[in-house]
Amino acid sequence: MAKLNPKFISLILFALVVIVSAEVIFEEKFEDGWEKRWVKSDWKKDDNTAGEWKHTAGNWSGDANDKGIQTSEDYRFYAISAEFPEFSNKDKTLVFQFSVKHEQKLDCGGGYMKLLSDDVDQTKFGGDTPYSIMFGPDICGYSTKKVHAILTYNGTNHLIKKEVPCETDQLTHVYTFVLRPDATYSILIDNVEKQTGSLYSDWDLLPAKKIKDPSAKKPEDWDDKEYIPDPEDTKPAGYDDIPKEIPDTDAKKPEDWDDEEDGEWTAPTIPNPEYNGEWKPKKIKNPAYKGKWKAPMIDNPEFKDDPELYVFPKLKYVGVELWQVKSGSLFDNVLVSDDPEYAKKLAEETWGKHKDAEKAAFDEAEKKREEEKQKMMTMKEMTQTMNQSLRKPRRPRKPRKPRKPMPPMTSSKQRWRIKKFSES
Image 1 (tube, rainbow, N blue to C red):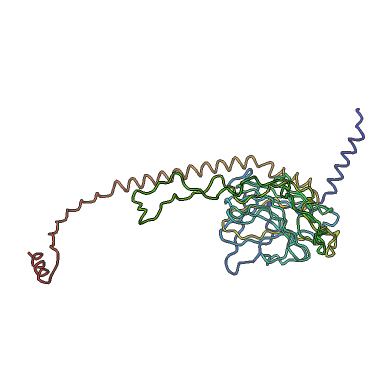
Image 2 (spheres, rainbow, N blue to C red):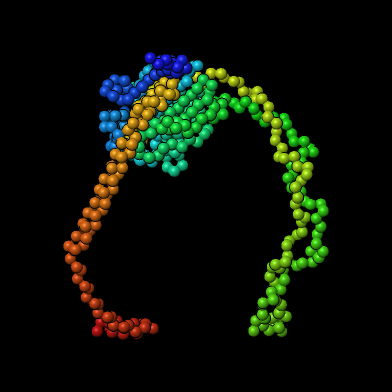
């Protein structure tokens, strides 16, 4: 029997340890029984603007049995949440992942989800409910097509300063937010990293570590002029004798010009093409140029580091809270974990497995929609043609009798005659 390589055995054991140590805090595929795990909020029910969630795979999917929850009514507010065992990401990686599909070709609306901390009354969960993390796509017109990543720190919501474009088509996409103990993060779309960086630089969670020295002043001998006049350049002889304007040699005295009456004729002036304006010496590089002066950076006395900047100590709920003008956004495969590799694996087993079939189903649906559109247009044209053929032709108007010409009125006597003339 062949002996196994010890290094190979070590790799297998390491992989097993990683798998065992990975913690899935919350995972939802919206299979049977999902309604027992999720609480629909009463928010906006009193004013009849609360929308209903629909359990469906959507109008096109790669697997009709792979269902999620979809907004189903236009001009409605939506709020739904699920509870999981309280979790702190201290000394751990936090992974927040879900998929969303905007079947309605979203013009303006969000597709984000939230992680909430502490105790929340889920029946009252709504737009004013405090949250810890808000993450996901946001689309509005041509100007807003980005991934939101909003972190709450000391009671204030902070938006990411980076512009991360989101997907805008009508297919399913997976959004992943990874937050690590070293305060670095990554944003992935469909398992592809789109943005990475640090909490320190990409959010204004803390005051800047360094600031410009407010007491610093530019030294008096600091030369910040990059170019200076050439001291060796001299004005050409006769430069100032060149007139700004000269007589127009093409001008001719008008034929009706009378020197005695109009004065001596002189040709009008035109700009002189040889005139170059006031003479200035040419510019040369300044040998004493020191560059643009900048105040030196100093430690910010307001800055106080927080080694637990990345920590959200009491994560307990995941929720969706939206306002939608056009409904049709479908959420699925929600994950809260501490293992980015497990998140990638889950994405491939769900979205990755069905994406090609979903695209084919979408293309087929679009083809049918276009055929139906053409059919309706043809029917409309046929109806218009038929209506035109059934219309009775208009009878031609009889030509009017020409009126008798009236003589001009010049006096009351003549007006009387005109009256008689018209009556005859």
